[in-house]
Image 1: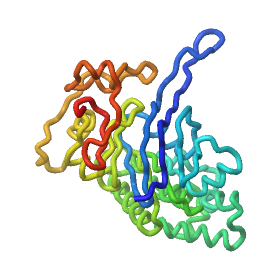
Image 2: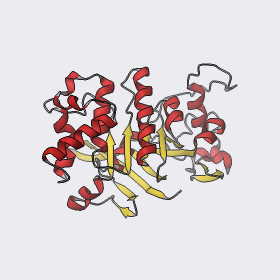
Image 3: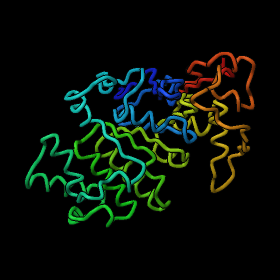
Image 4: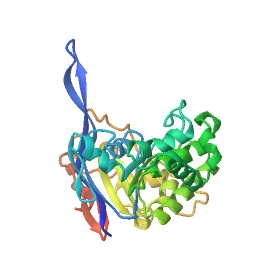
Length: 321
């Protein structure tokens, strides 16, 4: 599969200020040198505990947030340092849908203005053509053309998320970063939004980076799965390989904690001891070794490198060296 997105050694460090002069006294390593690819028409699911750096990764890829280091190559172009007009041109092909459908829409703007804004800013449509495009986008996400006159407060959470998706589709992007897009919705509405995104992917050959802490959602929508822990990518594999044969101890613990309607997997619950270390003071060596039930001496001394242990199945763990 041809790569649409290539991320190499991506980092995001936030400075910690202290003292009377508010000088930098440390750094929060939210994302600490991760690398992966996303193919054309592929969905990569990013999963991990809250605070592991999933959303920060998505925001850097969408260039909502500036990376501290590393490279983001989109459609053959390094966009990690682009600014101004060049960044604006790339953004038409790279969009984002945010987690909170209530906060992501301006309550003072009618739906027509919200969806039409990217079309107007990029000079793509105006007048009757603009209204026609808005109507078309609303119908694409399962809403009525007459809804364009309403305001966000007149819609349910699921409908607002559909509006957010319509806005992201306005410029016919190639890649959409979906950040926890169903976590704030009822279960029945979640399935509707997920099915809509799967349908749009097939019709428009979209690629997704789908960020979620819900493994059942990741199983439904993803082609490949990447697992993050404390700002690091610890495993990445095809969906079937990951759910049937996760290799990293952290991945195995996540899967063991996921509720299942019928408990026939034979998977025993793995209880992790201790708390997640602070990203302001991450442990030396493997970031997971302080909680890993299989940790060895080398784990506290040397950080494991991501390697291919099985065909298209990569893991960063000393157990497989």
